[in-house]
Amino acid sequence: MLGVCAYTHDSAAALLVDGALVGFAEEERLVGDKHTKVFPTQAVDWLLRDANLSRADIAAVGYNFQPAGYLRALTDTPTHLVRSATRARAVPRARNVLKVYRRTRARLTMLAQEFPAAQVTPVLHHRAHGLYAFVSSGYDTAAVLVVDSLGETQTTTLAHARHSSTTCDYRVIDQVTDPASLGYAYGAVTEHLGWRRGDEEGTVMALAALGDPGRFADLMARAIPMTEHGFALDPGLFPLRVLSRRFARVSPTFIHATCPTRRPDHPVEQVHADLAAALQQRTEQVMLHLTRRVQRLTGARRLCLSGGVAANCVAVGAIVAEDLFDEVHVPPAPGDSGTAIGAAAAVHLDRGLSRPTGLTAQCYLGPHYPGLELPPHPRPGLAARRPAHAARFLAEQLANGLIVGLFHGRLEAGPRALGNRSILASPLRPDVVDRLNRTVKFREPFRPFAPVVLAEVAPRYFTLPQLAPYMSIASGVTDRARRTIPAIVHTNGTARVQTVTPRQNPFLADVLTEFARLTGVPVLINTSLNVKGKPICGTPDMAVDCLIQSGLDALMIEGWWIIKCESATASGDSSVPVWSTRRMAGAATAGC
Image 1: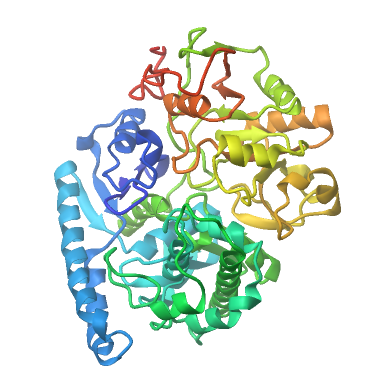
Image 2: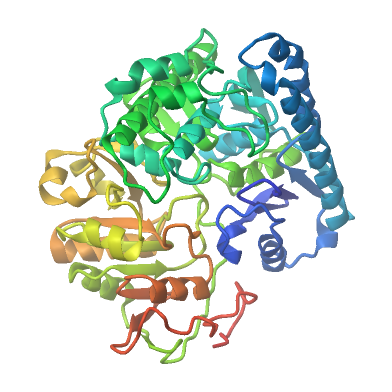
C-alpha cells in the first residue's frame, strides 16, 4: 500500500508491505526544490526499487485529501454574505473552494492513471495527520491533537485513539473549522514580517524570544479569541481565507495597529520582534487551552500532537511543562509530508487489517547509499579519503573546532536533521553560532542552533522530563548548560534538544561518546545539512554541493572524509556527479 502527499506542498510517499512501513521519502530532498508540490516520482521510484516492486504491485493508494470535505465549506457562504466583515470575500471564497474540490478530484484520477492496478482512496487530511502521530507513538491509547492551517475544512481536531488486539479505533470528538485557523494566523503574520509563509514560521518563533509580547498582547487576544470549544479569528484583523494568493491575509486595520509590512531585504526592528513575541505567546496560550480540553474530553494520560503547528517546539515545550500528560509525542514529520504515512495507515486499517508495524520509534526511513566509493578528488578542488575509525576521527575534528557536514545511513523524516543529514559543530567554541549563521547557513543572526545529547546524560544539561528523539520540544536548561555550553541556549533560556541512544543512532552516539571523551561534554550542535532556502541534502551530490557552496570545513559522507583543497573555491564545478542519484540502496559501486 502506498501513501501519497502531492500537488499541494511537501510532496512525499510512504510504502507499507504486508502491513509494515518499509520506507518514506520527501521529494524535496531528492530533487532539490524545497516544499515541492510535484508528484513524488523520485520518492516512489526509490520505494518500489528498494522493495523489489513495480507500480503494478501496488494494491492500494491513499491520498492525503478528500475532495468531498471541501464542499462543507460552502455551507458557510450565506453566513459570510450576511456579515459585513466577510461579505466581500464570501463569493470569491466559494468559487475557490469549488475550484479546489474539482482539482482534488482530478488528482485522484491522475493517481489512478499512475497506478492502474490500485484502488485509490482519499483520506481526510486531519485523519492522516492524527493516525500517523498515534501509530508512530507506540501508545495503546492516547489523546490526539492536530493543529494546522487547513485540511479540507478542519483546522483543529481533538481525537481519542485506542489500539485493540486487532485494529485501531480513531475517533474525533471535537473540531475547529475554517475560517478559525491557528496555522493561518501564524502564517499570515510570518508573511507580514517579511518571511515566507509555509516555510519560515520557525524564524518568527526564534525572533519572538527577542521581543516584548506585552506590546501587542491585547491585539493578539482580540485577533485570536479563545472560545469554549477552541478559538476563533477576528475577520477584521485576519480576513476571511480565500484559497488564492491574490487575497491578503492581514487587514489594513492589523497593519495600522502593528507596523507596515516588512520587505525581506529590510532590517529587522524591535517592533517586528515584539509582534512575533505576541503571536508566539498567543499561540502557546491557545495550544494550552486546546490541550487542556482534549485531556478533559479523553481522560488520556498520553498526548500525540501533529499538524504544522506541532512543529512549534516552544509551544510543545509549554505543553510538556504544563504536566497534564505523562508523555507527549510529536512524530518526526508532523507537517504535511507525514500525512503520506498516515494515508497509507488509514487505507490499511480501513481494510480491517491489524495495526501497521514499523512506525514506532522510526525516523530514519529514506534512501541510503551503502557501498559508496569515491575517487581521491570527487570534484575539482576537493580531496577525499577514508579514515580508519570514522566516529573517533569526526569527534576529533569537531573538538578541534571544525564545522562538518555528516551524511550517513538512511535519510531522516521530517523538517529536523536528526544526525544522518546534519551539520555538526562543537558548542564549546564562542564564535560557533555566528560562524554557522553567517558563513555556513547564510541566515539571520538571531536564529539559535539545537543541541544533540546522549540520552543517558541529558538531565545534566536539560530540564525536559522525557526523551526528545526528534528534536520536537524546547527544553529548559540547567546551570551546567548555561555555564559550559551557552552557545546552544537561546535568548529565552531554552534549547530545542535532541536526545540520542546507541539503539536509535549508533554512529551519532559513538561520535558523541568520543567527543565527550575528548572534551568532557557529551553535547554537539546539530543543524540540518543545507543552506537557507534549500532542502536538507538527500543525495550525495547535494551534500557535496553544500560543502562547495558554503563555509563548511569538511564533509563526512558514508565514512569518507572530504575537504576543500587549498586551491578550492566556492565556485568549483558542481556539475560533475559524485554519485548517480538514480543509484541508491543496493548498488555496489559508485559512478564519479
